[in-house]
Image (tube, rainbow, N blue to C red; front, side, top):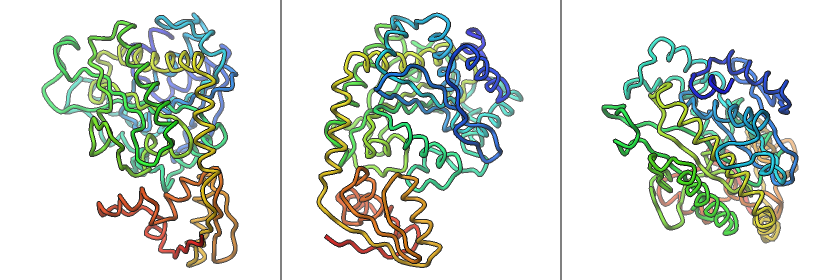
Length: 400
């Protein structure tokens, strides 16, 4: 299995078989839902500590290394107990690591079909039709409105698991004449890490995410991957590399979960279009990111709990407000369902929804309901409209 996970792009059937084998070896495997084409979305859990780490992989089906990485990490934990310089059994003493190896299993299946017909690593082979789900929706743009079966399933799991840290694991795409022979001969062979420098996120979540990003960046050097250039905050929307607060909508997984009290680290390797080229490096880099996050949690468990607790406390100390959503009964029912998917407490009548603040998800309620919330006002200045009155054609009234 080790060789397969390091060097082979997996079909959905091979992926499912590997998950089953890891379950037999002792991993806790759960089917948390199904895709549009009825493929299982699995969660693998290791450890039983009270710091909860969640790695979500393969939201984009044409990013194969992240799937292999979670399976490889699981295999090493169960079989060898170590990856690089990290003793995994020790690292997981204080945390529970949950991993979603294939959040977009239909995209995975489509990617393998296309890759099998044309496996040559080339910038001309990104197989973008496999990036999205079976309905053609980019699942990493669906975290605010949760329109898709897959993202609804994933957010329900988030609500249940309540992670302290979310690893948002991806591969990215470069257009040009590649690949070169060795990764140190081109800047494109790169690792990208992004924390949460986002406007209105709790300062404690920002600090925790920043510390984790810096720790993982150092770990890549220590583990012998300095030939892969590491860039920090390379992908933060329009504000690449920003050292200030970034105004970004909560539509992406990575810009969404910090408002729901999870520190986040986006981990990306160059890989879209590469197929199995340098797959072992790409897989190992992502597996090391999980391992060193767990080790960081082992060493900083109390600080992590305090940071998340402080973020929740800020939401619970929000001033008292009441939001009334009125409109067509179908639209109001849709609003209620969405609020509940976000774990926002509300009461529901035939033609209106009432949301009282403060509550544990005050920030997310404000993002969805309040045009005058500071984040929304800045987005509106850029002609970007995300509150639910624009989406569902409902009327929202705020009472202070």
